Image (cartoon, rainbow, N blue to C red; front, side, top):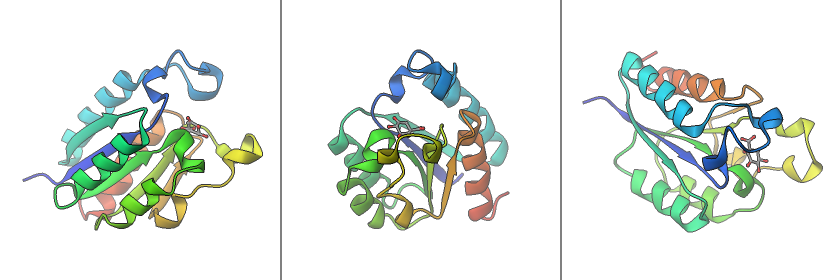
Length: 147
Ligand code: DQA
């Protein structure tokens, strides 16, 4: 069976395309999911795509990936900079983790410069806009010996 990759998206990413498009681009989360689904098929990967505005729901999604998903790609959005529960949940996940941001957070406000998630991440992709999701999937395929 194709190894499953879970792509987990945090708060306000449901508004992509409308929300600060000069920073986050014009693609919607639906557009990103569609592109990722097509790429995952080409790479021989299964895909679960999830978004929530709630920290606990993101923790639940990470816990649900244990034993089911081969890898996690996560854009924790604002929780990157504030959550301890999300990196704790990721620490209990056995596979590779890729942290992803559409924007280059280091070019932005100082409060965005620290990530609680990066210490658990096998890779961090930022500043590539929506394409970052496809780059993350390609990297994940390589990490799983499929790329
Ligand atoms: C973000 C960057 C975060 O600082 C911000 O809170 C987001 C999106 C990004 O994808 O660039 O909501 O994770």
